[in-house]
Image 1 (cartoon, one colour):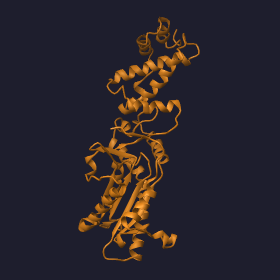
Image 2: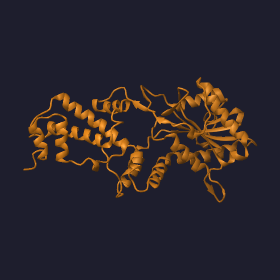
Image 3: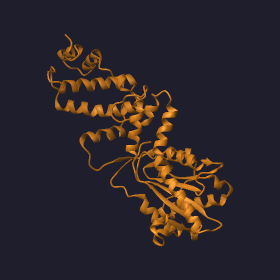
Image 4: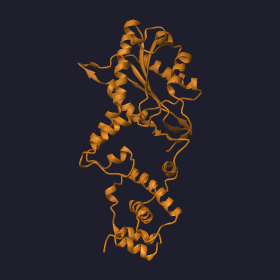
Length: 357
């Protein structure tokens, strides 16, 4: 399901800071301890709950670009027009499982860095504020980045919290991580639902009461925001990335979301998509090649530019590569006939746009 939004997006982190204080009776420890002490951010529920708040405020685009540059060296790496979803790549490579693993691991580096630091901070908090019963929690916030989807984040957190060293949990000072995102959503009972994932460490298995504390945090977050909460397994609902539409865009930038709202080529066969591509190339060739036999009207040129944007989105969804759209004179001539162009224009395409004798 596709969801879009417009306008400014308020960050989650300030809201969570207020929530910890107002709904969980939290004390901001940064206000009462040295900033260099490396302790946790909040002591909540009269000290029963220690919370370290971490924000994913980097979009990971540079990190992913570096990985993509390396993957392009593979002989099976596909070639696409424009931008493309990672799912399109996985349909084309010989070993999609290993490629997906590398992508997930690269996205997960920022998460791992946060967990590593939080584990040290929670350990320091335990040493400074010892008590028999305590829930040590990390609240991980996605500050509006599409790349940190719930599935990827859940996989990364489960892998980290289940990691062992010498038979003991590597991150032994973390009981649970709660992940929140308002860049991803699902519809449940006709309501828009944001994910709030609770990922537990092995320490929770022997202390079920700690799970009840995590559930309490989730329930109070819902009440504090004035919305209902629904408990479900992570795989029970498919969360979509919300498409954020800027308030101002160039003309070309409008066309992609326009097509996502109305993907009229969804029912086309691959061959029909290829034919639309050929028709676009016909108009653009006539418009921009200096010695073409005729110049299309402006509305036809704009149609071709808009349609190319739409075709690129559709080809990305279908994982159709550039190599499947070779420049073939006879196909372009057929496209010219479909467009009812005059005979001398058709002949021009048959002769490879004037290049053939």
